[in-house]
Image (tube, rainbow, N blue to C red; front, top):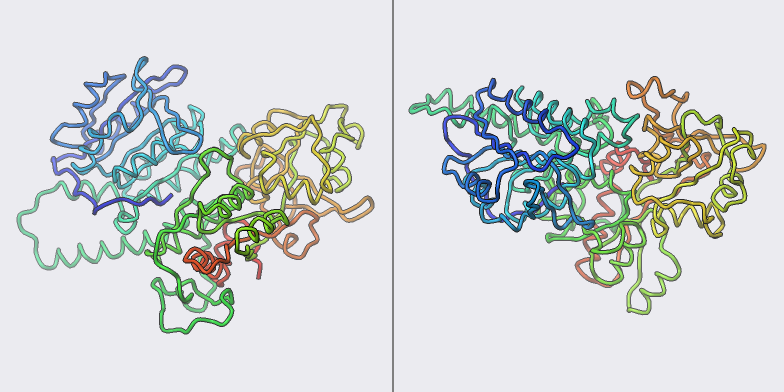
Length: 574
């Protein structure tokens, strides 16, 4: 996650030791002692640890204001955020729950005094990150959803193991997340809970343990040769960060080498004239003309999240003045329909959708004096998953339809065990759900026994715990999960069953060392029955927003953009 912030970065405290402030808040039901042990071990690396356990408000505020300052702040305990991610609270002790606003002056003091990183090893921290960004904190790590205690402890342990080896912050988080994969069978999606939030002004300033400690060493005189070596190492560090920024939060590893004949430029190339067709693809992101400067709000399809995480940081590294900011509706759940509604009402500059615009949406646009344009940029498969132990390997579209409309309610009716079926779905206004209802259910209503689950992560947990459960979702998100089994699908009885995964099915006992991967080829050629296109939705009203949406579509349709889409687990449209 990239965030805006005012002003430049503050120099880190030069106290002589790397100072870490660990605050342990209310911890009923969780073992924060393990967090303390992990952080205390940093003393072996030369750090000075200041630990507060369930402090009073006064003690907490006064400690933040110590003149020596801190390089790293860590909170361990209970926290929560508003559903829209705008506000967060920490449970400081058994009595006091504080929002960031309630101690913002003390936080602003410690940030202005050179705080480099805050880690909230606690549940549901996006609201905390949002408020800290407004205080110009350079970098923070939060958990995007509630996180199991043992996962949180291991993430903290793995992160500091990597970070103290002088790996960059980005690389350390990326590796720590990968090392959590053995939790996936018990906690699907656990790897993707830790999230980096970083100010744009900090993107080209890599943070490492050595960089912090190196600044603490006072050297009255430095030879010219040493200065040159230092500058060379700094340049190398920036190049390394440039290579990992857009890959650290993706769900796929970066390929070992680029198949392009020559590397793409990392700065805009303005000497090429605009193409006649505004979305005609070119090879590199940097070759796209007329990318407008400004701040552009966009959203809101959840299917698009891996694409946004993969490609938006790369776009902004090349076009830093083309500032992309994801906007969530303050009350409605995220989804394609919500994003298009926000676009129609002028709340965002362009929308991302996992379904085409509807006739109703087109009519609303016409009534308001403009048109909606949809730019297809990728293809996606919808996978069907069940419990790994369920003795069902495949379904036809007709059987799938009858399960979700309530005509089939027991697995024994289609050759499985005598077990009640529990169908799960995302909220009914989700783009994936609407696509499923229109194309699989033929616009029939979902049965009353269908259970709506807010997020894919929660739905996968339900299926993992319920042997009779079934769920549909974006293939790139659910096929690699260890706790569920993807089913092959056929258009009709007697037809060919096509798997949504590549090759042979990886059994649960081989996961996570091996994982099922999406069958992108089958999604592209149409042999897999449930595939769809993903769109950038643009409001055609001759505004700057239209120009921004068109530019975003052109960027995604470049060869470089299409490759990044494929790395995110989706099929390129070209």
